Image (cartoon, rainbow, N blue to C red; front, side, top):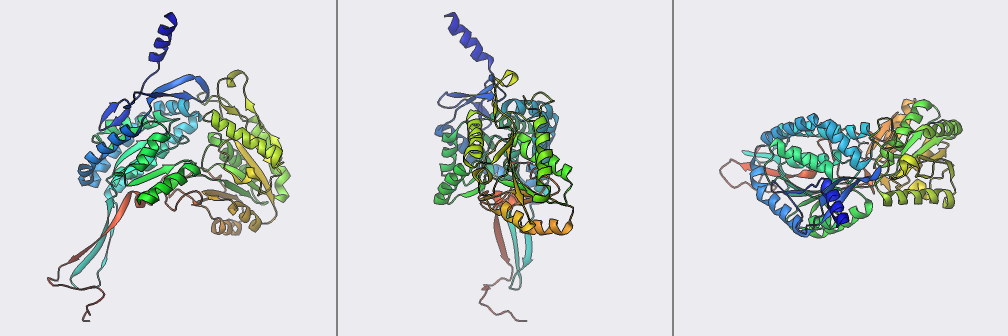
Amino acid sequence: MAKAKEAKIKKTAVKTYHNYIGGEWVKSSSGEWFDNVNPADTTDIVGRFPRSNEDDVNRAVAAAKGAAKKWRLTPAPKRAELLFTLGEILRSNKDEFTRQMTREMGKVLKEAGGDVQEAIDCTYYTAGEGRRLHGFTTPAEMPNKFAMCVRQPVGICGLITPFNFPMAIPSWKLIPALVCGNTVVIKSGEDVPLSTINLVKACEKAGIPKGVVNVVNGFGEAGAALVGHKDVRLISFTGSTTTGAMIAKQCGRENKIVSLEMGGKNAIIVMDDADIDNAVEGSLWGAFGTSGQRCTASSRLVVHKKIYKKFCAKLVEKVKTLRVGNGLDPKTEVGPVIHEDAMQKILGYIHIGEKIDKATLACGGNRLTKGEYAKGWFIEPTVFTDVKPGMRIAQEEIFGPVTCVIPFATLDEAIDIVNGVKYGLSSAIYTQDVNNAFHAMQELYTGICYVNSATIGAEVHLPFGGTKGTGNGHREAGTQVLDIFSEWKSLYIDYSGKLQKAQIDAVEI
Ligand code: UN1
């Protein structure tokens, strides 16, 4: 009896959160919940969230459908005004949202702050589109006829978001969807639902009308119901290549618009004329920032033979000094990985690197379990050297604090190595030679390319996305994202007062 009571008290001490459907905060229809756990300390339950199923998704889509017409007919500059208010709210809550993000996701405070900042930047930048959303006019081929085209919203958008950028990535999808006049249902990342709730509470506070933004929390069953719903016109997904491929198939069958942002196996080329210290700093940041859990992480370092030994020595020396720990401690440089399965997968790749690929494990390679690490998912920052481009650790996305150093002899060989993977998100080159830099910019087949900087750090006003296995040709961010969340409508206005047949009637000159 006493035990049961104790359990009950403990249970009520955990804060519960809800789905947001039609402007109401509601439980899941099944009454089931799941816990959001701090990956640095799994005894710390951040919150309890509704485990949603098809019923919940149906309700959320119905709410989005109910709100669609009014929102679509609200003038874009007015929609944008609410988004500017949203930007203000995010800005004034940045510190709180940052701490909560670190607690649920593990990334260090500075990076969580950057994540919230990216959502703020995206909100302000994209809200500006409310007064642009440019179409164009063009001469018609017949006299007394006017031609132009405008963007129209696509309808109800399903947004499925990952764990690694808990507020930035939802904002990349949500804000352009809204400014274009769509209504949305978000299926939040199951490991980081609180940051989405924070974003959506801010939307509520900003006065975005009921039903325009809806959130269902939960797992794949909720995501699948959203993808399969007949009223959802568009799915925007960021996550694993396997899930993305499944979504693409289903959307293809039902002729839905689908934008996919998936894996990466990004590389930095370090030329023999590079500033080595700068390249080492960039590599550290690119490989181990967010514990390597970025689609853009620098998981391959392709280094010129002439400086290979020196570079590896400097890199390994620095990596050994990185402070691993709870992201809430401001001294921590590398936080935990997101959950046990992710940790096992990463350790599995380290095993493959050592035992099957037979690369040299230059540092790291272990799970940390003692003392402050005992309750979380921590892995030592790991560097493999003497890596050959075809090895599995140099080909497959590891999504953890592991990088591979690959030697090369000529720039063209390095470019082939960088391009020789199934992904094409981000690439970089460190060189002081302008000719090398431009040659690499031209030949590296990736959606993003950096010179004298690592493969991470994209800004919200430039297009974000990748080639080949990374995506399906769309770009988020920038103004290019508007091409995902709106469709073109061409308008022809004939004021000649008679039938004029394009391509057929002769025009007198
Ligand atoms: C991701 O890698 O999953 O460019 C997103 C960056 C961030 C966004 C990364 N602004 O590193």
